[in-house]
Image (cartoon, rainbow, N blue to C red; front, side, top):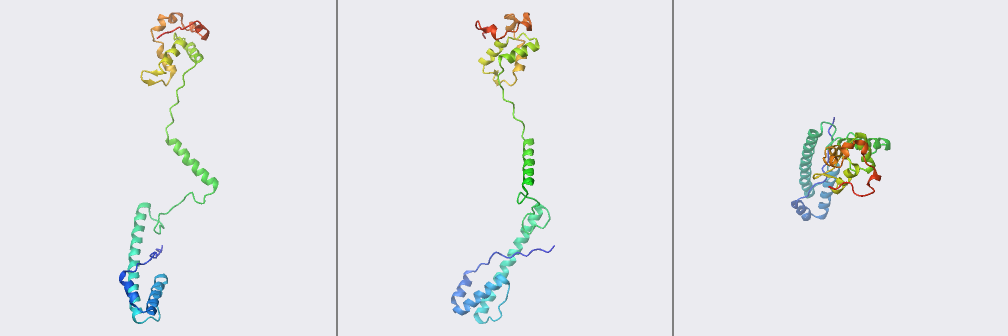
Length: 214
């Protein structure tokens, strides 16, 4: 592969060169400046340049050549660093981009974005399910299912008063709390344990007043 030659983006005129141009006759200065610009842009050498204009042009040409050589070294060094980082390839001073979102067909771009979205979702852990306090009917059904001595309304009233906290921790699973509540002595005091799960109360049983006081 043939290396692409990069042209320097410009050249700098030093103060000494400006002084030389200002001291030259206008005609010689114009010819020297034009010869310098032609050499920088097209690498052409002047055919009929004599005297002071020729001497000044030689000085300017040497500056242009020197600056361009420095620029080529910088380009080569940058290219080497890029190849070292991104891998060898036709970098031409910039990283080789194998594919991007530019000029992709809509269906290809949508598929790519969907794949990226799925990857992000797979990497993100699922959020914990937000706790919702159970209804009286839900607790009644669960107590009946387990043949439990827990009084549903008393269970709800107890944890409602505590803001559905287990100690200092918000409740996560009311069914687990209900299973733990089966070991509370209060059910024996209230006579529900001896009666078995068939004595589980319904909402109609609480119409006369409070059943449980903590």
